Image 1 (cartoon, each protein chain N blue to C red):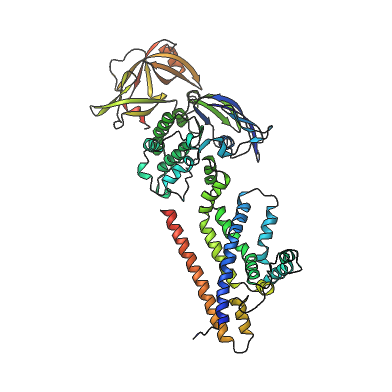
Image 2: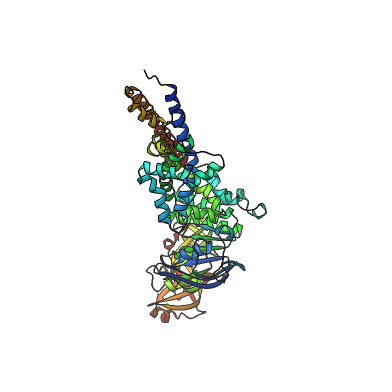
Length: 229
Length: 351
């Protein structure tokens, strides 16, 4: 029935690769950002919070365009990297960065909600028992926010799978190199007779999204069992 | 332990000002809720920064605003037992217990976990998750966790107020045993007078954010006699119960006391209100009350419209209460002999 071309298979593989990389690479930053927002008395917290959440409310195209300006060969970061022989724009790395920026607010939000639920006195207890702040961070805060981290990571993974607007601008739509599932679907829909293939890729998207949700549920259940032990 | 504190802290429209120096092992901080007890505890533990002043423990500076010293909690070696235990929910009882123990240098691990587990009677709980524990079990594990971190001082913030009356008095013997066995100084925060009297010697009394008296739990209890409906509560530690005629005979000092309720543990703590002690000038020939104790009057004090009478019963201390007229009729002057008559049913067992 579904007869995917090699390019389609590449798009499916690339989508998974981009989403996994973006999620894993964002996790430490998302955790750190949530920690700073919840547990420190940082100045200008509302501003930092606003900046982190901005990609959530901005059109992805705007994010993509700004990233293109930043990472392009004439952008200050892109120029710097170009001197070191690293090219980001129009490679799969650009797709990863686009996914990271767009999915980051979802990750931080979720982890933050989990951290806010931690009773502050548990952290105080660990400190009075001789734990340094970083010790508390890894032995109390991290395990107690693990469910929120999983939830945030699944959300971000799913968002990365669907990322389109920012990706098409900063990574382009190059089959076999930067073409992910949404971009492939977009191309099929503008090609005569591509409807069936578009629908096939849509099905793949649905299956992947469902798998992520089920995986997430399963993990959360396991953690709940662990906590009740 | 020597503790010198002179701090001020403003929290909204509440200000705490405390200035005291004391030496001792069993210290109480007493006062109604909102009097600043917990704020003081947080500042001692390093969980809250005072606005100004200094805190010294055994000569070491823990906080000094002028010298800009503020040791973080993990460097103060002051343990805290919180009101609601606050065990780590993601760890087993055993991992909770050893959390602090694993974080101190080997040469400072002065307390043997096995011995402590035995004293607290928590061996059967070790493998369990903390969410399956009862309130009393949680509090015992929390105490064990703090003691095993080998602190120089343990702060207990209303550790019993989350427990019901019966459970509270089941925990107190464990507390007393642990502090006696391991010799750790204690600062016990509570608004319950009985807890103060059972756990502390010296008491700092707070009200409205001010230290209003540096006193003893006994003095506090005597002062209550004039205002409280229940009078002064005598606490009697009695030993070696024997069943006799459907009643129980306990040894209290050198004399025997007859009680309606008792048995079980070889040592029991009982409370007896000053209202339930009747004084007679001469030994009555017969009375329905089962206890007639020969006492000597140590002194009297006025409290409201009542008079408290401090008695010495063969070396044991007892406080009774009478009204003014009775003082004249009984000729209650220091040194006079008197008979204290107490019903067997007037005693209430605490533990």
